[in-house]
Length: 256
Length: 256
Image 1 (cartoon, each protein chain N blue to C red):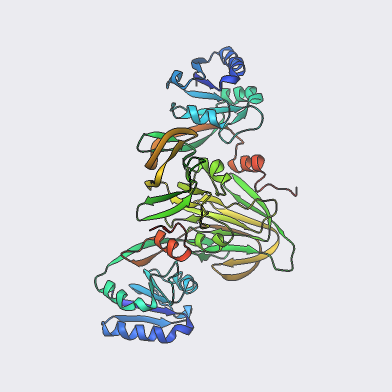
Image 2 (cartoon, chains in turn brown, blue):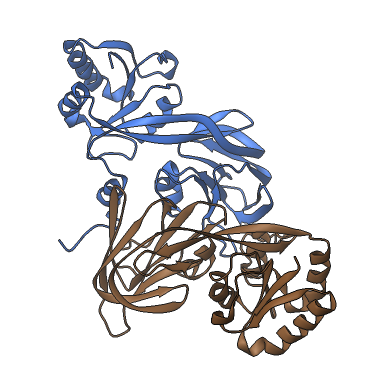
């Protein structure tokens, strides 16, 4: 791992510069250093992403090398170290001591937009509820709601969770469909195998939001598993359930 | 399909007898005819199960041939025809016109008890809440609750759903863990890949209920995927999402 990319959230430029200095001291080559996705060069052995989960989502689709996220304050789900742990990271890097955490991308077929977390169909605030049909091989469901989230296992701890959805371990091969403010009490999430192609039709055009990016308004779109996956390098003691317990207090041992 | 087994709920004996007559008229051989699992002979080409989902759960683990459930009133999730549709079934049988719906068994390792729906750890009504640790490869969660349900995708529309869990399509390869009346708001279901071995430890002995059968009290048990699966034969127009829409009104089209 000699060839390193550095992508950062604009307001973390100074921290990124400090990290870059330390990398150079270790005789590591920096392939690109930017807060703009257009500057990303996909020739790195590893890409450091300095920022929260949003920054990771933004950059990850443009690189094929493993990524490592660094976040200020508490860890995000997609970050592996806090910013204060950079020296710990350098030691792990020297020993090549990482755990590989592979995550699957999915995509919107119509515009080839990749997503790691979720795709959301959402009406505008002034509009009435929308009729939604979700079809897949051999079946369909209808919802009358403000919108709908189709989430990957990675995204199951993001917007889908806020809407009442379940937590999927990252290695479950499935989609989660969770309606937003559904009428008729049809509020439970539905879990489909990842090999399904899911087609969503809405009774009027709704915003299509792919990993937080508004892609405009659309009446019909389909999602499927992409060929792309990414490896997040984690400290050796990383464990997904630990991050759930620490970040959300979910399933935490209150009694020890 | 010449060799047919007939298993029935005791109070449906007369209906089962009527079905048996019709099968004989078609020159089909009846391998066994009983409401007792001890009488089941595992040499059939197909086994008819007359009763609700509970009767199917009871008999299915003793046969390796495909099964077909017949239920009075509305269809259950595990039944393929209503009792009134027996003549329709005979026509489908003649044409060998069925859809295969494969379902996976899981098992409790300690007593080799198979289950198609779920295994439940549950305290007695007079007892205080129990501390539960659920461990799996690389992680664990803790709950303080009345108990816990570990459900298969098939069981996701049974007890787990009543507790607020999601709906899994039958072909998702996963377990669902749903706590019963958890404290600390850790109430969401957790979905794990089916290849995990899950170990459950409770702070005192709780009832272990496997597909509805109380197996006594235990402090520690583990569950894993079994090698056994079963094929449910369905009418050609069967579709899981249709059964969800019809039985629960979930994701139904109210607007057509």
